Image (cartoon, rainbow, N blue to C red; front, side):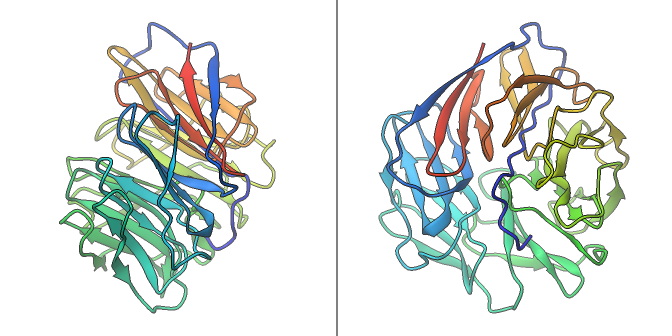
Length: 345
């Protein structure tokens, strides 16, 4: 969506079963990045390798768990905002920006050089999110062009991209949010989901690796340009959660979270909502312990029952979050160069 979200951050995680160790607090360690960039792109490969991207063409990478960061920013598009990022390891990463005509860049040498992998002169393109199902299959989505979301597919790790045409039209005033690089979910099974906001708050879903799409309605708040679904995450092919709200009225918490148990065909409103607007969704899981974590500019909440009920955890907020695989911990990022390591206790 073409307004820059200055305070959007929703994080969502959901659980395969009720966690036996429900977190009651978080411990945050602020990391030194030596930049004032605003970060909405974040990718955690493991507890050591972390990539972040954001305003001013900024891209950072850490190979020591965030203790130090290397600036590998892309030199030409200093005015671009890289809201979307995916990484495979400490050498290979991909970013998409909100401005073109050169939108997508990939590095295979740790950011020493970047190659353009997607460019397009179509007026109105504004990429909100990218997501990979596995090492090869990825999706990218832009705000609507000619009445449909502009969706790209790759089957070769982001080296080449093709536009998807078999997708239902949007409603007038419907768009995506580039709040935290989480308006797409994509699983190795080929199931995929794209969340929308604005005049409508719907979920587009695919079961063939994004080649064709259907759309479902949700009970989420909608009707304003700044309202709707900001983030979507699925634990498996059937169990998923969306969160959002009204980003410039974050205190309102009516219909700001919903869940599905049928793959996104139907959605139910959460019984107990998050405390306020949330903009990013991810699962935190270690062994048999898992929960859903949602975060925004005014704080964060957790759910241990798949998004049916939410409990306020902390008033600390950021724009985006990614869990460390296999750990009850992760990294959060936000404005003014802020990146924080988060541990759940």
